[in-house]
Amino acid sequence: MFAKKNEVCRGESATVLSGIGNIDLTDTFECGQAFRYQKIRDEEGYVEYMTVVGDRLIRVGQRSRGELIFYGLTDEDVDGIITHYFALDIDFEAIRQDVMKRTDSQWMRTAAECAKGIVILRQDPWEAVFSFIISQNNNIPRIRKIIQSMSAEYGDNLAVKSGLKKCPLGKLEGTPCEEKCHNCGICYTFPTPENVAKRPEGMSPSHPGFRYKYLLDAAERVSSGETDLAAIAQRHSYDYTVEELKKIKGVGDKVAACAALFGFGNLEAFPIDVWMRRAIDTYFDGNLDYLSLGDYRGVAQQYIFHYIRNLEKGSG
Image (cartoon, rainbow, N blue to C red; front, side):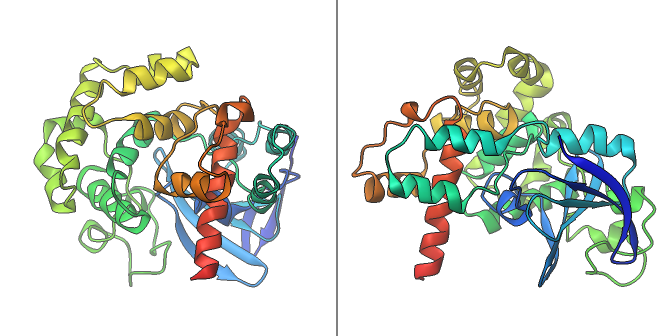
């Protein structure tokens, strides 16, 4: 169990959580599982991000692995929102050990060591489904841009709603307001299926392309209850989750697996995209029995995905 204490950090009151395994904030946010984070500071010995969880702006910093520093939150927020979203009740080091004992691949073991700071965030099921439909044939910067644009179009401005006197990202002069913030979209709540279904033309300015009809179908199905995301989540069944999500137009194996892993807590999901196919072909001779990696193979997938992306960045 992690430790919690209140202290002044960088001149601000903060809640500091420690003893959280190997958690690495940068690796966790930037491993491709989430798209709503924004890096605020990156200094020697300190990194800080802002993200949106539900209807809350979350500022979180880190000085070292295994520690998270939250600003402006109550104890109730930490015990509820933070513990759930950052999956602080899951022992990811035990999961890593479980994965490693199931493989003889030295490359896989190295990947697990490199990516040991990753935890699987518990994202909202609707946000995961919608975001990974957007992710089809897309890169992360553009996915983030589309989501920010749609959030500004459909969501609530949390910087204004929270009464902030200055932009938390330092991007604007003066007090945040709708006119100043709309072109940014970072501090907004996520589009609801009801709002998208009611006014689908609001998606057009973000240029979702061929994904438009898939996003609309998802919004209509979820808002009508035809696809009941809460009921799907309550089943805790990967096969059932994938089966139900694939009823949405444009949702195939990869999108369904991503949504299952990152939005429904199905840690046995193993999404295969071009990065994963490249890793399997290059480092596993084109044949990886991912079922042999056990019930946490979705976490193993993140080790592989994160490691190959960093390898290729380094070689570039």
